Length: 85
Image (tube, rainbow, N blue to C red):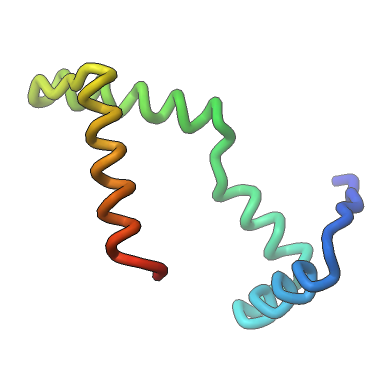
C-alpha cells in the first residue's frame, strides 16, 4: 500500500499522536483505523435509505420530509441542551 503525506497543523498531529499512543497504536495505524470506521456522505445516504426502508417494512414508519426535518431539529435542540460530552 502506498503512503500519502497529509499536511495538518502540528497541534492537530500531536493531539492525534497522543490519542493513538493511548490506544497503543502508531499514528499511522490509528489514522488507518479511523478511516475504516468513517462513512462517506454517499455511504451515509445509502445507509439512511436502507434504514428507512427497513422501518417502513417492519412497522410502517415513514416520516415525510417535513416530519424528518422537525425530528432532526428536535434532536439538535436536545443535544444542545445536553451540552458538550
